[in-house]
Amino acid sequence: MENTTALLSTAYFAPIQYYCKLIQHSNVMIEQWENYSKQSYRNRCNIYGANGALAISVPVVKATSKKVLIKDVKISYDTNWQKLHWKGIESAYKSSPFYEYYIDDLERFFSNKWEHLLDFNQEIQAELCEILEIENKNTLTDDFIPLNTTDFSDFRNVIHPKISKETKDPEFNPKPYTQVFGDKHGFIPNVSILDLIFNMGPDSSHYLETCLK
Image 1: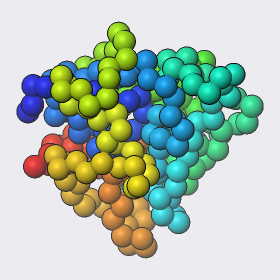
Image 2: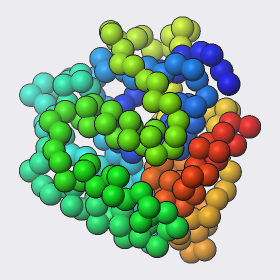
Image 3: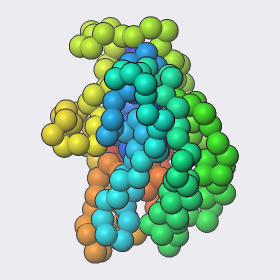
Image 4: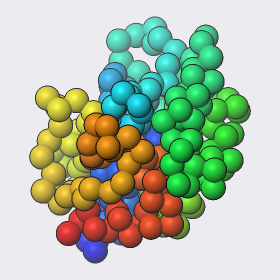
């Protein structure tokens, strides 16, 4: 277990790699003073559906300027994306071993409304940490922390859904586990933590530890 502080971006139902950092580091800081970045895990996640990996995104209110701080990003409800995400997750995982066990704990994220994306993601992370039975030890940054800092283990741009932007992480070694559509498409690593929880249940936190070996 490392004693360094991990620096992470906010994330919507973050990937497994993200939650490995929560158990690997004794302190975690979430960057709230960075400029919002499109097509990242900040407002999207990848679930494993019948046709393979499926990206679902939380729409945000279009900024009046080119740059907006992540703490100021507001969620858009112009479309009923919550219903679409709920149906997508149901379709992907309703036949998984632990779907019925956990889904009621997550229902509020698809029925209640949050104004800001950061607050929404923080609530999700708190709930998931409780489900995983791991400590929710993150704090928000007081100011923007420069890139390439040596004071933290900086994963803000390391954990990214686009392969072209993803940075090699030698400390993350995902092991195969049984997935709903694994027989059809094979094992897909590092999808949303939802995939792990619904498929592995109480063994999820132990799995996270194995990915660090």
